[in-house]
Length: 96
Image (cartoon, rainbow, N blue to C red; front, top):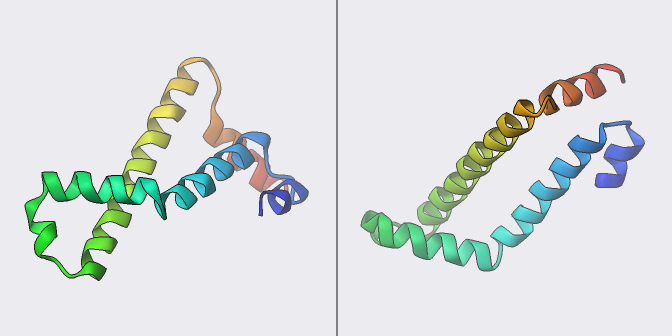
């Protein structure tokens, strides 16, 4: 999938970001999912009373929110050093 992004001419930073996102999704299926499940169940007791499907949906939503927040923090830190990743991604998409 990353190779397809490369062939389509996406920026290097976008490809790296997608690679990290895909890696995190793979990790979510295993150890990270179990740790997040344990953490959220301990912090939010109502999760233990939910059906497995609802519980899994809440965990996936929490993972996506954590990913978005982490991405925004990283983009903000990089912008403080003069690197505008979002502009690079938009420029790469608009050029093709």
